[in-house]
Amino acid sequence: MWVIALLVIFSANELFFLLLVGSLGLAGLWEYFGMIEKSGMRCFKAFGMICGAAYLIGSFVFFHLNGYGSAYDFEMLVLVIFLFGVFARQMFRPTTKQAPLETMAYTLFGILYVAWLFNFLTKIVYVTPPTSTGATTGQFYVLYLVVVTKFSDMGGYLVGSRIGRHQMMPHISAAKTWEGFAGSLIFAIIASYFLLGIIPDRLAQLNYFHATILGLLIGIAAVVGDLGESIVKRSTGVKDSGTILPGIGGIMDLIDSLLFTGPLLYFYLRFLVR
Image 1 (cartoon, rainbow, N blue to C red):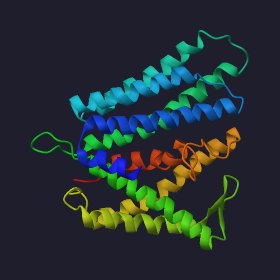
Image 2 (cartoon, one colour):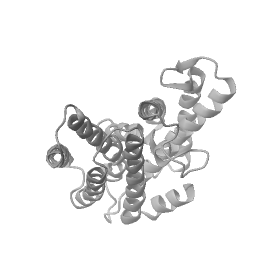
Image 3 (cartoon, one colour):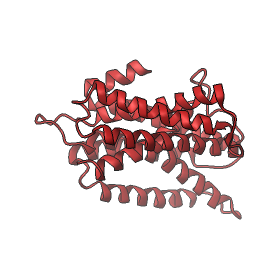
Image 4 (tube, helix red, strand yellow):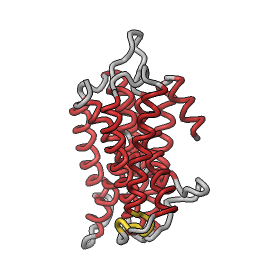
């Protein structure tokens, strides 16, 4: 998986990047709706998948043609379409007590939680200025994001499994410890420094001050993202979102932390880096 991701990023091929982000995002969304259905709750799975696919593809086309300058209007349009669409879909089903509201809520939450948040990886590609030839440069910030986030996950697991004694939030995840949380932050900062050290020309908008702050913020957001999926899994009564990845679980178990770290890096680059 790392080989595929690195080839896509260093190829600078926008279509390959769309296929990678789109396939992971839609697979994660499919697993989310699967968890909802497995728990006995209702959702508009087909409608949600269509919305997710349309958004992931549509945003790629929009940002490719327009950059991120008018992103606000595009995002507002998307959210309105999602909201109107889920109400329109419900009009074709019987209305009984609270079931319609719950069905619409689970569907809309899934689209926003998985597709909308994961699509910030696409936005990061276009948030930095292109080269003189028009080539994108943001894909290397996506590489930075993925490496720092995954090192945070590994740090939390390695430190927590070895010396973790004090549970962090046992009502959400019994395996999370404060020692593991500290390991997540340390590993995230180390990875942040490492990436900045080996490809400084690709991350030209960052310096070691930014690398320190982002390491801390991404480390925190990665833990929050992991706990966020734990809430969903606990609510739906499943241990893993899927079984496609041995030793990890499903695609949602792979991208859960990126759902929170992606928006954080995007807004950091958008407003705090010059």
